[in-house]
Amino acid sequence: MKTSMIFSKLVSFALILQLLNPTVVLSSSSSLSSSNGLTEIPKKFLDFAKRKEVVDWMVGIRRKIHENPELGYEEFETSKLIRLELDKLGIPYKYPVSVTGIVGFVGTGEPPFVAIRADMDALPIQETVDWEHKSKNPGKMHACGHDAHVSMVLGAAKILKQHLQELKGTVVLVFQPAEEGGGGAKKMLDAGVLDNVDAIFGLHVLHSAPIGTVACKPGPVLAGSGLFDAVISGKGGHAAIPQHSIDPILAASNVVVSLQHLVSREADPLDSQVVTVAKFQGGGAFNVIPDSVRIGGTFRAFSKASLIQLKKRIEEVIKGQAAVQRCSATVDFYNTKKPMLFFPPTVNDKDLHEHFLKVAGDMLGNDKVKDMKPVMGSEDFAFYQEAFPGYFFFIGMQDENSPKLSSVHNPNFTINEDVLPYGAALHASLVTTYLLEAESKLRPTEGNLHDEL
Image (cartoon, rainbow, N blue to C red; front, side, top):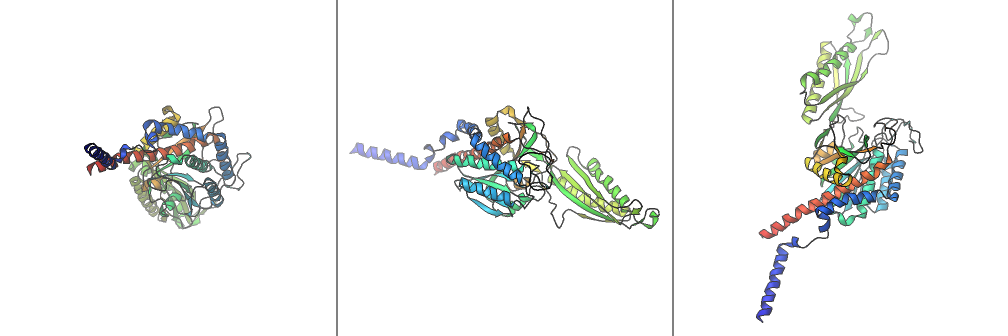
């Protein structure tokens, strides 16, 4: 009797301990969440992505998109193709988001939520590359690699779908319209479909870096940017009697020179900034002073404060210099037809940088993960980073045995399609390990809370 009572008490005590500290029971992901398990995931995913049938599938998608390039907010056929592939994979999604955008979901449907992003739009460029899958839309071309970006995210979706048991949360697939100046990222955020996202990853192909390498850095990696458009008005007249005119060309010329002083004389030399006047339109005859001149350009910096200051001073300089020459001026940073959006700097989260270094190093080798200098180009991925932590990196695609690839925004731009499995596997590995690490951080916390009880 005593023995049975003692045994009963021991059993009860064991059950109480089990209830108070459930983390002593190994979860189904315990082997994966170990250091060794996390290390193996990137290699395993890359092996999967390099399977011939997977590569051929991604290449086929990329070529279909390349043949039918569509400009910002016009990506209807591209969006239709993406939805068709998501349907085949059995992945639910929301559509339409911001006209043509799509947001898909892979995983448990529960928090945490981590996103990967692909931009879908093409550029108004006439392709000059002569190949079987050349653009069929005159004056439009995928000259920035967005066709490859879409294929990579779809490839990542395929990998994730095949490894659902390893997802301890939800991966959000963001297919975004209008990256090329249309502010598609901001519109996706404004739609509210990403409100629960904890972090986001994005990439861009890099023509100059070797295949199998990646490059990035923590902190500012791409500049913020804005556009300006100004009309300087005077009084036209005959060029032989300028005293009867008010010359807007002279005023505009002084404006161009004075704008350069904003960087050389007003900006901190250690705070990189750019002001470029790239448009100067005025007059149509050799002997006529025009009534007005239109100028326009871009300004860029790596901090939002510097951008705001540049914007303020650009307007002051244009109006002030115009007044010196008896002219008037209007300055627009927005246009009624197409918003000239103010793009913030692309600033990479430091914790996500450490995560990226580990995952990319495990997949490619630490020697293939390069540090890069900041670039004055801009990316609307920065809008996501203002809403939640984000990380944007570059993936090389230059084959050392092939001719040098042309840079982006070039009619001769081409994609080395060998890059597709690398991008797909990196996307899938970054989010899978992110979710597993998030789970492993939660488990000890839950255990401690129960212990206190």
